[in-house]
Amino acid sequence: MATSDDKLGDSETKIFVGKGEEPAFLTLALANRHGLVTGATGTGKTVTLQVMAEGFARAGVPVFAADIKGDLSGISEVGQPKDFIAKRATEIGLTYQPDQFSTIFWDVFGEQGHPVRATVTEMGPLLLSRMLDLNDVQEGVLNVAFRVADENGLPLLDMKDLRALLDAIVPDPSKKGADGEDDPLASIRKAALAFGNVTRATVGTIQRQLLVLENQGGTKFFGEPALSLQDFMRTDRDGRGMINILVADKLMQNPRLYATFLLWMLSELFEQLPEVGDPEKPKLVFFFDEAHLLFNDAPKVLMEKIEQVVRLIRSKGVGVYFVTQNPIDVPDRVLGQLGNRVQHALRAYTPRDQKAVAAAAQTFRPNPKLDTAKVIMELGKGEALVSFLEGNGVPAMVERALIRPPSARIGPVTPEERKAIMDASPVKGKYDTAIDSESAYEILQKRIVDSAATADGSGGSVWGEIGSLVSSIFGTNVRRGRLSTGQLIARKVTRSVTDQVVGGMAANIGKSVAGSIGGSVGRAVVRGVLGGLLRR
Image (cartoon, rainbow, N blue to C red; front, top):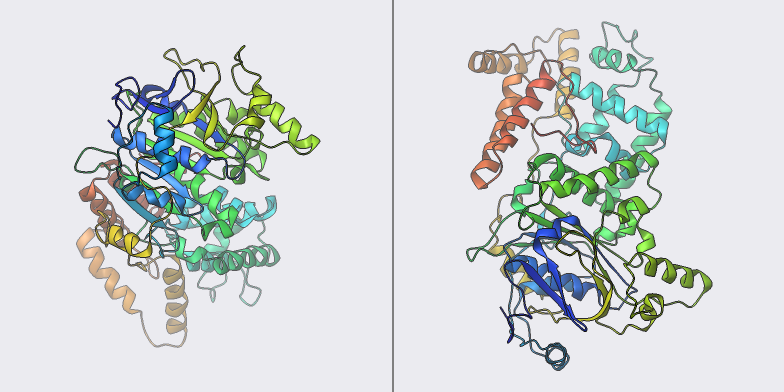
């Protein structure tokens, strides 16, 4: 504990965030009630985020945070007692002691961190439609594609799987019809027709949107090995929480991909983690920077799901902290769930800005000693209005406070320092090499090849022989031109067992096997609240 006074510093139950007339503490037992950090650009939001992340890590709570500008990466290196840091520590009665924190870097593009991947199936049609900016008709066709894939044992792992399936569900006028003997994909087209007409024009629009996503790097996100979220929930050898930093400077060039990716992570956490009620401290804290991107132009159904996840995920022991410029960036129904607040300065140069300041002031519990709206415009860099939940879960009266200086470095790491951290990472080698597993694209291609081979009299497919071998091992019949239940189980169990060895939940094994068997025998895969696979 880096303080000369036991009343001023992190403890086993509280995080010291700053000091005004009184010290400002964030209570760990109430940290899963979520929070909000707001303020104009350059007012100190990133430093506040770092201070809170350090406090959680000291308490043994793993942290996930998006690093938009690269400044947060310095948390992995020992801090330096620069003049302004020493001055701030003295002002609040804190003895500054440099520190550093165990860090894992992640990057959707695999350039400045370990790759982060998800399968198309895990993303689900709702979130994928949001990512592609599809209208209702196009989203309906995407739902049809996912349903057909589930019922016909067609794993959707990467982008080429989804492209192949979309082509397969469109009626082909060159064939004899959905039941045509010369159409190797007749059963797929017939299954799609059961849900209504799928036009080539609509599928073509979706394919073009997929191309846009691919050009923005989306192909690197979809695939295997898919991320095990248990790798975010690690502690180091000293019992401190690991800090997971998502390198997001390049990801922010596609704001919709960024927002949808983080929303997918939240939904996966919600689906995977067990209920724990209100623990003594969170199991994970999730910082969502540039949070306004999540809510911009979100359709009503998605907003309802976001509200549901935010409201219920606290019972899983996860605290979600939104970081944005103004509280009005967050819808009221979500804002009401965010009990712990830090408000940095706002500027009011226009009538619209003045209304925004007034709205921000109204989100705090009033303090008779403060004109909250006036103080918001007077705050200096590193100053904030704070209101954390008290012991009975009620927000404390708003107070003006100086934010404590971080113990780790403020600012980015060098490429050499980043490489050294990644080389020593506990997940090094687990995600670094992509795997192209047998999935929908290969299955559909084999059906076409087998049909052509049969038509020209060249004999059966080698896949039939392989299928017979797998059948003899797993005791299942293999339908020609598609993966057997045995093959699906083998691949899925391999992935799940790997996660289990690393420290994943045993429930993932049951989920993977159940999902594979369900697709193979014709049962639709049950999807979770935001479209990902529901863990059972």
